[in-house]
Every structure is written in C-alpha cells, then in structure tokens.
Length: 369
Length: 137
Ligand code: FES
Image 1 (cartoon, protein in one colour):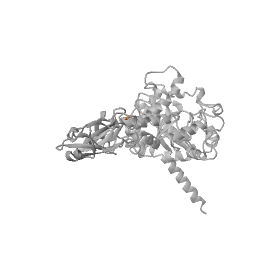
Image 2 (image 1 turned 45 degrees about the vertical axis):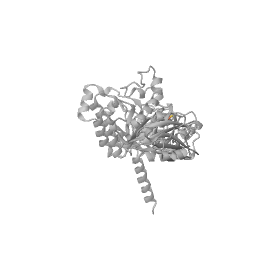
Image 3 (image 1 turned 60 degrees about the horizontal axis):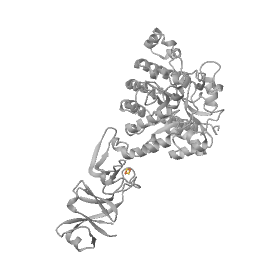
Image 4 (image 1 turned 60 degrees about the vertical axis):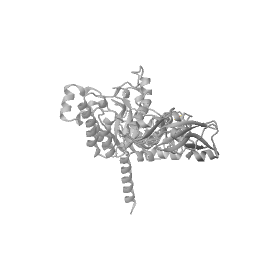
C-alpha cells in the first residue's frame, strides 16, 4: 500500500556509488597523485554484488536518462523525498573501499566518500542524512574516521557490510562500537561482502543466486556474533541496524537462541537474560526488501517475534522491490504502520530524534504570535 | 502424606546425592554443605535423571570475558540438556518461575523417634543410635 501520510523516515536509500574520478577532489594531495599515477582514478571501485549494470540495480522508472541509477539528485528528490513525502532519508553509499587490502588507501577513499556524501548530497537537501563509511580492515582507521565525521550531526550511523574479515561482534572491533556509542551512532550493517570469506561455511558457491540468498544467513551469523561476544552488555546504548537483511528468519532465530542458551549459557555468562530479549532491545531491520509473501504472514511473524519495534521503514530506492508507490506491505495495522514509518526510526537513531525534536521546537516557537 | 525413612544420614555426604525410591517414585536426596534437600529425579524439561547430573556452582559475569564461579555445590546441571537448577529451591536458572523441580520435605530424625513411628520404614532396619533421613511424600 501507499504511505498513508507524510513524514516517514527512510532508513535505507542509495545514491549511486560515485566514480573514482568524482571522488578525486575529496582526496588529500598524496592520494590524488597516487591514484592518478596508478590510473586507479579510471577504475570503478564498486562492489560486485552491487554492480550498477545489473538489472536489479534499479527500477526502470527510477533510472535517470543519463548516468547511474541514484546519481541524479533532482530525480531522487522528486521520486523519493517528495514522492514518498519523507521527513528524513538515510543515504547508504556502499563503496568498494571497504574491500581493499591497502588499509591506508581504503581509509582515504572512505574519507573521500563521506566528504562527497556530505557535500554532493547532504548539503543539497535538509531531509538527507548520511551513514559514515569506515574501513573495517583497520580498527584504528575506522575509529579515526568516525571521530572525523561525528561533528557533522547529519551523519546518523556507521556503516558496514555484513560479510567482512571476521565476525563483527569480536572484541577487536570494540573500539569502533565504543566510538559509535559515544556519538549516538547506531551500527548499520548492509547486505554485501568484501569477499574475504566465502559466504557459506563450506566454501564458495557457484551462482549469483546463491550469493543473493546467502545474505540472510550471514545476517543471522552477525546477530549471533554480537550477542555471544557480549557487545550489547559492553555497550548498552548501542543499536544494530540491519539493512536489506529481511527479517522472516527472526522467529526461529530467537527461539533457537533462547533454547540453546538455557543449556549452554555458562560458556558466555554475560548473556544474563534470554537472548531473544537482548535481540529485541538492540537489533533493528529495514523494511525493503520485505521477505514475506503477504500481510497475513507478515503479521504472524511480528506476533512470533513479540515486538512491534524492530522494523524501520525503507524504500531501498532506486532498487526495485515494489510497484508504484506501494512501499508498505498490505495488511499492517495503523499502529504498526506508524511504528515502522516514524516511531521506530526515531527511537533507533538518537541524531534523528534530536533533529526532529529541534525542528518541532522551532515550529512551536514560530507558531507563537 | 506419609513420612518415609530413606537413608542413614551419614550415607549422603556433603556435595553428593543418593537416589531413593519411595512409593514407586524416584527421589534424589542432596546434601549441600550439611543441609539436606529432596528433589524429584525427573527434570521438568524433558525428564532427565537429575541425580546423574553434575553438582556445580553458579556461573556469573560482570561483563564479556569475566567469569566467576559462585555458590559452589549449590547447583545441579541436568545431564540431558544442561539446564541448571538451584538444589535448595528446585528452581531453574533459565526460567525460575515456571520451570522448577518438584521438591519434597526431608529432615533428619534421630533413631529413637523413627523407631517409635509414625514413620514408614518397613524395608529399612532402624536402630536407636543412628540418625535417619525422612522424606515426606
Ligand atoms: S531434560 Fe533436563 S535439561 Fe532437558
């Protein structure tokens, strides 16, 4: 169905990944020179799972006449921001820097992407928000990038791919979470892989179809990693936002975690309450692509999950997941729709909450004669 | 309810248990630091024989990577799926309000009392000099 009112918060929208050439002005002198020397400035550092040439990379009516899907600001404004009546939209730019082996180059390119996003996108429309792209290959450099960006309150989360070097909950990554928690930034994790590891536990699959389907179990692995490593005990203010993960795997994941915890909890005694409760408190999921067949099934899943706080509205613009303006699945209650469109995103992102609060206060002030 | 003499007190040393059968029902008698407890030998989860489980302590933590073993000898781990139970109350650690082991009253009675009755001790030779464990079923 269409959104019943204006003011929804889109938690996953994709401006096109900029070409390396477009990033050059945002690089420091050394890297500008270095990339030119090695002709890397002619090279598109896009992730293969997100290749802009793939048919699934954009809805036909959302392709600009020229350039990559999501590259035309005016079109994005008209189709997404105005089209869906959005209050805020979080731009997730998944650049291939996160998969480079040269950690300094990775960090320089992440910085360039974040500068580019701020200047070329966030500056253009007050409704746009950004995710901080960090080099997960090196924790110190990732923390430095968070610190560099944190002063710009339009950046509302830190962004990772679901498959990287190691399970992301591990202690080596904690300085990143500490910095994120300190600045009120959730950890956003998007579908995708740096292809350091095979997406299955038993090696490399043969087909793209497998790669696509295997994202969901990777997200389950990630949740289990954050849970068992005790990330949420260590950083009680931290939220984990999974983008394009789907969520229909949740009922069995929650149930199995609770069940196994009962007998095996002494190995990880910091899990001091049923795991499903911890997951419900800390983990959130963007809506599109919805991985349930219909509203009836979806409502049953919400019932099994036992919470209406877990799902955050997203269009995943310009990727094709629904027809026309029907960004919401049918059959949801009015309360659930409001939670998904507005309340859940505001409760998840402290910086959106602050911005919305300040905007409301301003409106009230102006309303007083 | 009747009271059954099930063992000599000295038979169940601190930190151990003894399985007895009363009215066809298996009951575990546990000695935790000198205090006796009687628990049904049937795990409330799926019926594991609790007397075959390990007697252990309570593992707690102040945060990831921090481990403490508290209250040694006061907990019991079911041999089937590892759920933990507090011996003194029969409560499970994972779900204390709805998952608990059935408990029975057990007390130490001197031999003179036991000889006088009203205890059921048909199959159990009792002497006035010793102390006995008496379970109420
Ligand atoms: S039967 Fe005792 S834990 Fe399952």
